[in-house]
Length: 201
Image (cartoon, one colour):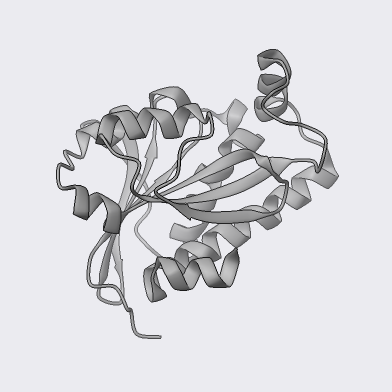
């Protein structure tokens, strides 16, 4: 399929660095972008000290892709966003895509949104502050069991869930959500955000 994009994309995969967080719910966004890069044979991630992130730069057909995995902890993700020096709000709205975990969606599901509030997600809030706008695209990856966990629960319980051990059944569901998110990224790159929303939401 020929790319429908007339601009480049900067894709953030949010999560925490380090082996101990690798397979936690909180790293769903990071793992989705890792999968997207692998599925599209983009260059391997390399440490970028300036961005305080791992970065992969390549192209899908005629569309340039910069994928970044902040190496700060989740609530400091804006450091990487600020280092990219994106000042043009139109460029941010068209080019920035963030994949992240979401406690308001059932595990294994995804939802694509644009120009929406953070809903309390610390990593997203950090990026919004750094960019000075919320007008960009996000792929929300569900990590909660239906009718089981909401952010209104105690912060301690939320923390235990997002970075704690995960059952084999939930691991399989999470992997399905990560796979969907990687495929949704592909749709965004090739066909645009609106088409991706229609297909995946």
